Image 1 (cartoon, rainbow, N blue to C red):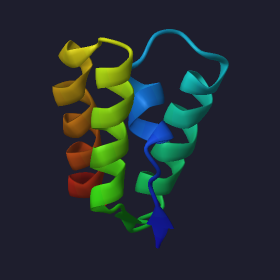
Image 2 (cartoon, one colour):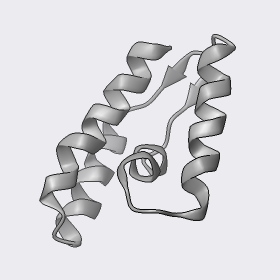
Image 3 (cartoon, one colour):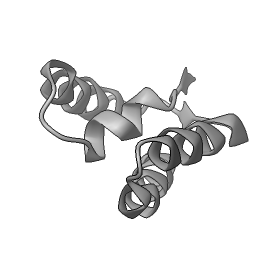
Image 4 (cartoon, rainbow, N blue to C red):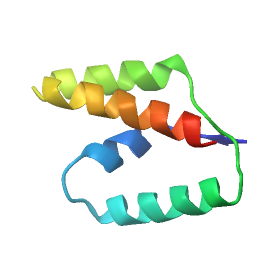
Length: 74
């Protein structure tokens, strides 16, 4: 079981970043190997807090969708 922290969906939906490609590669391997991916409500809260703080309200739904998509894949 692998815990998905708030940084993971933020890398997935955010702008170019050195960790973005690495995050996609690691997640791909985890999903392909059948690992169970889990998260908690705090991740959603951190996404809300971060994107609200930087005025990126448009990124909240994609961040949530990324978390939910990962949960469905595992």
